[in-house]
Length: 458
Ligand SMILES: Nc1nc2c(c(=O)[nH]1)N(C=O)[C@@H](CNc1ccc(C(=O)N[C@@H](CCC(=O)O)C(=O)O)cc1)CN2
Ligand SMILES: Nc1nc2c(ncn2[C@@H]2O[C@H](COP(=O)(O)OP(=O)(O)OP(=O)(O)O)[C@@H](O)[C@H]2O)c(=O)[nH]1
Ligand SMILES: [Mg+2]
Image 1 (cartoon, rainbow, N blue to C red):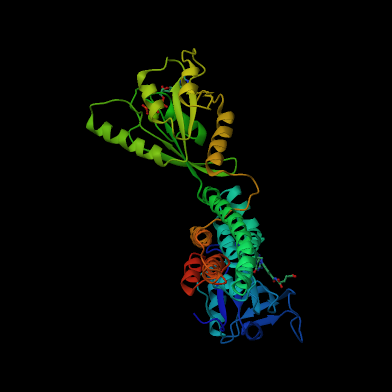
Image 2 (cartoon, helix red, strand yellow):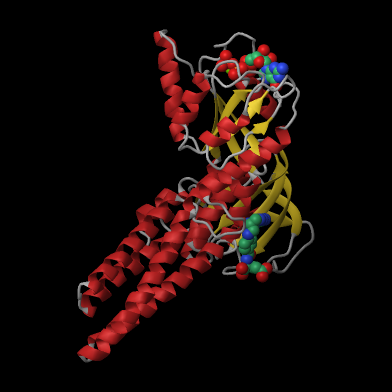
């Protein structure tokens, strides 16, 4: 993909809108403007970053394609860092396509997905964490996901990585001076290097742990509703979704398959799954279904374990409780509108550190408290603290893991008397791995992988 030519694309979504934007970036941007735009007032020059009104004219026919506003931004003072022309058209797909087609004839080529942002990266306007943040902002579906992406675009993660890099460079400098020093100066400094490395290793590990949160912010968390038959699992799903999604009947065994829907709880996207009631059965089909429920429970970020409060605890309930003792379980007792016949102590004893919440799925009682607890369960699972810096892509995570690996390897080596020359080599590897996150040491392949997930025009 050449980087010194001029690219163009429709920057607004396909479909009708009030305004549609054509974006053009590269050295030909100004010439394209001169060829296609007829200002409504005669002009000597176009001043950068001002809006001009006029017609966009097809040079072959002399016909006006649209009445538009345009602005020209001169590099490096533009998003891409290059000369950029933006044409604000009426937002109809035929209008935009005809204007784009004239722009392409006038000297631009169609941009690849993400190519404007890629150029912003290549011109050092943004680093890779910020480029990824732009993609995440556009695809965000929850307020938390959006918040994380915005703070990443503002350079929060970049700043954190820069601090880590400074520390590595400092360590490298110490190791390199040691190479030239006598044994005893070196051994004293070596123990300092070790403690610096130790603290760096902890910083890296803490940042790595934030991946779980980043993942939940972007993709949401999975919460499974489980319990024996007829406790009101499907009723609970419906009340949380605020729609009659699952079939509810008084007959135990109504739900046979998973019913999965996403719901927004406190700015987090939660995928809720209603499941078949767990119970001992001879029926092969049911057995298979229940087996699948157990598998689903093992993968979930959280489990709502539902009991029927109008009946005493049964052996079935106890069996499920024992088997889920080690999962992230929120015990919930349903049908609080009926007479209470269930001893909740037995549940809190089995699930240490939990207190069951009483609700009525049928009448909506206790649902706000339950929502609060669901979000707490999921946030705890991810170790989420508000406002913390998080990593947000698998790519960042893998690069950090390799950095950590080199740091730990150096630490272990130094303990066994590794010479500073070799330790310095490991640290250089760590720096290289860390540099991939911001993109200083990223390959074409990595860039391709990131930018091809973007839309055209971004
Ligand atoms: N019309 C339009 N809206 C847009 C964008 C765009 O490119 N065009 N953006 C693109 O995605 C986003 C905004 N991001 C931008 C980032 C930097 C610059 C820019 O021109 N920066 C210059 C000048 C800054 C200044 O005024 O001081 C610079 O940093 O030198 C423009 C947009 C969202 N809205
Ligand atoms: N009184 C009362 N009845 C409820 C409540 N929640 C559910 N029910 C009733 O309990 C029965 C079973 O409800 P479901 O939601 O189908 O229960 P389930 O756990 O999905 O059942 P299976 O799919 O068979 O495992 C229905 O008759 C519901 O109307 C509640 O809060 N109070
Ligand atoms: Mg059901």
